[in-house]
Length: 213
Image (cartoon, rainbow, N blue to C red; front, top):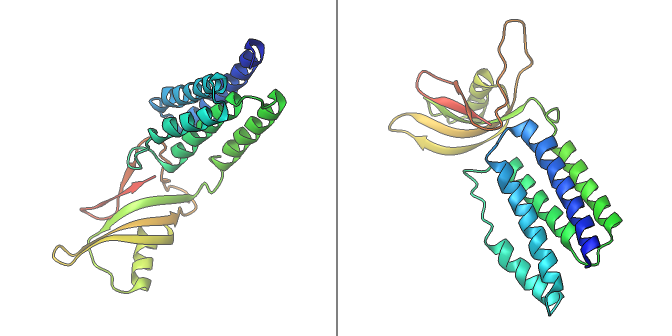
């Protein structure tokens, strides 16, 4: 890859990752600490791919080098949400596409545009805007599904499904992860806020709380 082609591919990569990070991700999630992570991962991977493409051994060196780079990328599920993992992989793939030797610039630009469009639509705030997920602690143990469903609907909204994490007969409580649909707003009611950076706590009983995401 000559210097002019390399510069064009680098410009495409920087433009694509800048659009993804500053025009799509940050306005929606406001996770400032992830912005340098996305940019660094993208540019570093582009640099590695471009450098390995010039090394002796060509494709073999590129394959082993990428395997080594990607094997050290670890994402902790308790610190990074699923949407943010999707942005991680998108920045990673953008770096790969733009840095691959021999891939025409127009082809790389088209594939990058498809990735950006998919992320823009898939993570749009209006898509399933009323669907929520919460970890709910109830101060009672419900043995019947109908009674549990009615209690969850009374407290958070229409439940779409749930997973029981803990049942404590000594303290008489249940801990569940609930996927529910937020009820439509009525006059004087206050909506659940859609938190994108931290969990929002709303009281479900006098003791426990529900963490919305």
